Image (cartoon, rainbow, N blue to C red; front, side):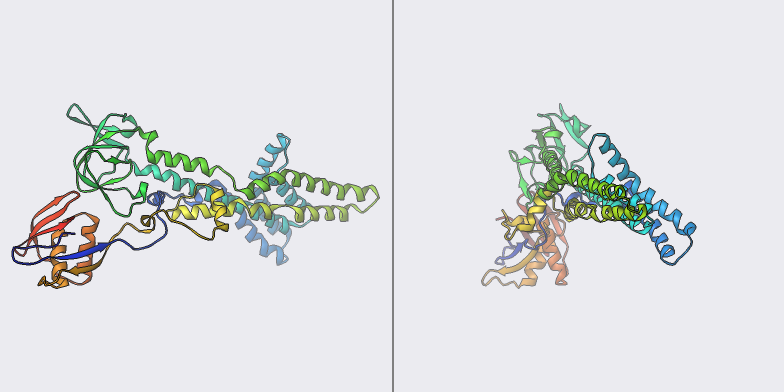
Length: 438
């Protein structure tokens, strides 16, 4: 930072730094605004209806109320929470496979058949709530990923033979020239042809501060232009931009399955078949030897309920999806369930650069005075902040914020000028000041 100067005064230098730590900022940080509401998902609504019906029936059942009082509530619980997994199970059965969804529904219906309406209803509610949480986590993860695309503007100002034309970003072609005004997001990856500005590239590169961009420099779609105006040559169409490729890679990787889930799916078919076979055996063999039907059915249905692998299924993918969705809400994109599960065994983390741990909001660290300068810290900071008062640069805002935290009164700055990549100049209290790069 070049210090305030005057014809008669020595110089002094406020030093600015950006070191405020927070969780890692990745390309998922900005799109956190997109968020699906819980009740927007049908799985959540059905699960909520099933849970409410069960909670209403439970005290009536335990309190000894007549069956007509709690029976319809249990029936609603079974229907609301069990129709979807039952349908999926029947579809799987049509393809000659037996999955845990159908096994769960059969176990719940079997519990009701032997009079254990409460047990069957609880099984239905647990499975329905699990499915709702998994659906919500999946949608929230998709929100975090697809929200990246919101960074790129929908329209661009294309320059054609000297004329300005507003066109959809999807219509841009390689070689087109676009005009990006101060404060606008860049519509496409490209190369700066004319102009100078600072560009906030944190959403792509993780850089903690805006970087200066001049003719010949590369810029990325979705990044935020600063105080200067840029003419940019488009180097890639919308589908080929860096941000679009990031979204495609994360979506592709999100479809991968964790090793635990793959193992569960591998044994699920065999396990479900084994449970059904064992249940049939527990029912058929004793009856063949003349056992009582009611007690035999009770024993077989009890075995099916206990052996139902619901807990194993619920302990695999839903927790991973919830963790991925939670990370997305905090600005961290996890590329797959495999990566999330692998974190359980991580003991050390290496970061490729300091910028990934900053929040992109610089703060003034200290004010260093040159020997025999004749100015104290407050005076230097007051002059620098006054000159930066009209600046939109993050470093300038940091200087102004530091002055206000100290309660300093800023004099009016005149003849203010800003040079992108250089700094600002102004006249403050009769002094000619320059604040910026050496």
